[in-house]
Length: 90
Image (cartoon, rainbow, N blue to C red):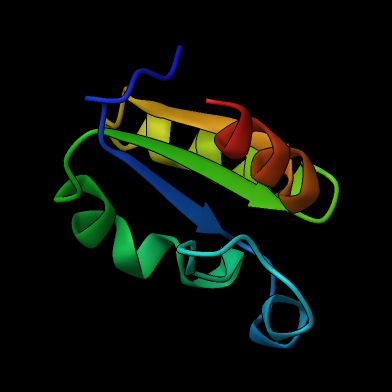
């Protein structure tokens, strides 16, 4: 799923406070409530977008919203700890 040539953006949809307590290095913090206002920004990102949060629930909501607004290369990576493990294994 992830090869070395693929551009990946990881967006953490937790609150800024949660993000500051720990996050995947290099991830962007766009809290779930900001997703609707930042769809154009997210659409402009090249490559695949992975979303994470604390458990996978909020990132799942963000994925559904972004897909409804035309993004196809967007995936729920689950919790930020799972996303970190996934990204470091590839």
